[in-house]
Image (tube, rainbow over all chains, first blue to last red; front, side, top):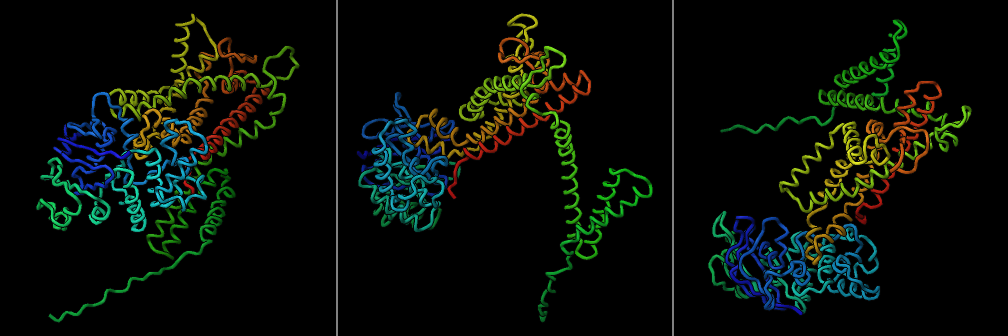
Length: 259
Length: 351
């Protein structure tokens, strides 16, 4: 079910402002791809353009092509809602729905779309998704409690469970661990490793060790200069990026000499 | 260079403190001292209270200045001033409630609540049943008109309009509408119904239209505030699950802010339930019970109070005070309901 993504000559604008310029990359199916780079270089913008979430911001638009298994995301008749059903997203800050219980939060993707399902079927989805997100053992006795009552790390895993409950083909993660402590971070990194067997995962991170630990391939984004659009400097296998990058800027960034 | 570092002088961490009962003692002395004026000069109770307050503030400040520091003296003075302001603000409220309850309560009985003011013979007792029905019907009608209009307008402003020209125009007009005098709303409704149904058309629905002109801006404003409080994170979370915009609005945004919206609507209702002027114009004045807002005059509680004061006998005043108490109780119940509903629908934190 996992799909690969081909990006070619992608320019992303906010109104007249060119935020990201000329990105070309191929994200492989069933692998983890990390985007790294200094703040404001367009990693998150790039990630959000992969499931048309950037359009939520007024004035945002895209030029170029994003193909998911041969289907263009930005074709004339493409419904962004349908795109987002196939390409799920986890955000920087955990954002469970405050009016819903843990159980309802996991089922939110189905319920919000008024999918009719039997109780047994719903129970199965909840259990499968929570197990998939490594949260089942911690919450199985209090599924009726509010999702906001969980700790930050648990909330983030609840959000991941919610995202995988609709069985997307690709999972986008926008700095999913930046608000979490090391133990929760490690739980989520383990989870990413497990999810990789079924999903294509793209993760934005500020933490280079994290990129090195979890990803198979890494893309390094940078600004040419302040006020200039961000661009993709180098896209390579993570091993090569961290051991022997092609680009000197990449090496400088990874070894901590700037940024 | 042989300068030796002299250690900085130790700053004292303690200073004298007034005992905890100091304000109470000063208050007693101030009241007693000010009591000399009524005794010797025959002053009334109001100047006595005022002089006591001045003595209290001055006494406490001076005592604190002597025993404690300058800062705590200012602190005592400002604290006393704040309490005084609070007391002044409370006086009319308490006085109003006391007057309404003491004058109204003796006249409330089952006859008062279940009879209309329509007499078939002179010795027949009368009540305010017709006015209670009138208030409920007209308020319900205006809520039916204003709540959907107001909430949908607010949804447009927050979710669709975001800063475009139309939305800014609507926001400006809503602000203007908040300020229109209620009599103007009544005139508008009157002329509108005259234009549609001929001269002299008067019915409860006209009053409901006039009141909804006053209610809509309040509903729009409070709903708008509540919708803005819903974090964008939640909208994005719903979009990322492949939820269409309208479902995100109904099931996430409205659901999350439901408690606040209901509270706002209830408070808006409480605000218009006491309106008199527009209803005098358009809903008419009657002593009979009328359940049909589309036909015939309809009297509400405030209009009934006004007409009773116009008549001017002791019995009429009694009826008016009783009605006033009922009106206050209805508003109070609405406020309590708003709080309870707000609590019930508030997002749960689970802690």
